[in-house]
Length: 374
Ligand code: UD1
Image (cartoon, rainbow, N blue to C red):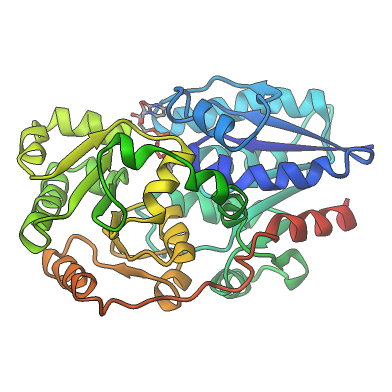
């Protein structure tokens, strides 16, 4: 019997892990899979709802770390996770994406010491993505995790190229596709049944969906004010379009701190909500007229669903979404955002194609490799 531990902490990890968990369950005579939740995201709206929507069991181990400065958060994850790893002695640890919990877990496993002198192999799911912007905490997490991981599972061709350029051996790199898209494909029938459009009194293809939480956009008063101008500007280009904005806790805090809520609320047709669960949120993504976001995952989900996505960042670590998909990178350039929305209104915006291996079978490919390797 082999033991595999998945370490997850923040919202986007849960969607990436769910299909891998389901595949591993198919091999339960050979493999025990345990889920460790660091507690980086700790409240019901940011965590529990996702476990429920994705059909995941309760985590086997909860570290309860919570919100801290990056150094404190990672240090506490490392201290608590080390105890778990020493006790459980897993054969492999799976880490996902680019959040603080991911890089912290990779460091713990690569440097076991004392009574357990060998390192624990780490597999990184969603490896190789690079924004080449080291001011993003996620880019640091990606670099640290990839340099330490033993198996690197990649979602798009740029990931393979980036890892090769960084000198990582081809033997460690596996282009297996996107497990977040596996979750989306599996749950589409459930997503279609969500009542969220009715609850918000909006209709298909007549609303814009906004998400915002990157420190670069929300932690600076000037940038947050610029983003709000962009949101308010939608009224001038698309006066009849509703605007749905589920507000991330970080963004809520900063809007209050900078006294910018009033500016935002002056927007017409604006519907502010709390963070939504996976099913309701994806229902909104699936029939939005367009999306304005600074998220990583939403650039991919909108590409799969062929919904226009305007990304309020200067770079993307997911270039396939702009090259093949429906994503446009505008940063906080109001003119570029206006141009994209005008193209959408005129029906001349790019239609997009679905990238290779975004087919619902990525977790199956990953687990096949894992079974061969452990
Ligand atoms: C984290 C990830 C980011 C990911 C995002 C998805 C890192 C570096 N960033 O950013 O890559 O896209 O999650 O949401 O790991 N908070 C709550 N309730 C919670 C969790 C957080 O209120 O359940 C508040 C915290 O008090 C904190 C803020 O949200 O002020 C930020 O939380 P944190 O986990 O540090 O980063 P995110 O911005 O969510």
